[in-house]
Image (cartoon, rainbow, N blue to C red):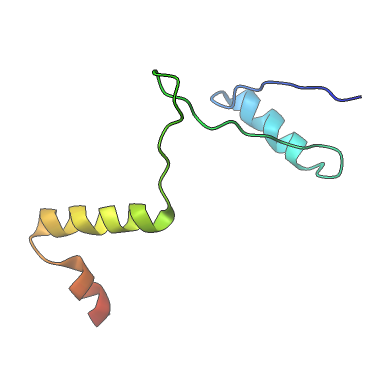
Length: 74
C-alpha cells in the first residue's frame, strides 16, 4: 500500500515530521515539488556558482573593488 501525504515544512512540526521520515530511506520515498509562483509557473532556481558570482558582483559594487582580483591574491 502507498500513502501520499502533503507536509507543510514551513512549520516546526512539519520539518520535524519530514526529518523523521527521511531516516527511513528503505521504505520512504520523498518527492519534493518545485516551488510555484503566483502565475502557476515554477520559480527560477539558481546554482551555487550563479549565487556565488552574484555575491561577488554585489560585493564589488558595494566596496568599489573587483573582488575576483582580491580572491586570487589570497
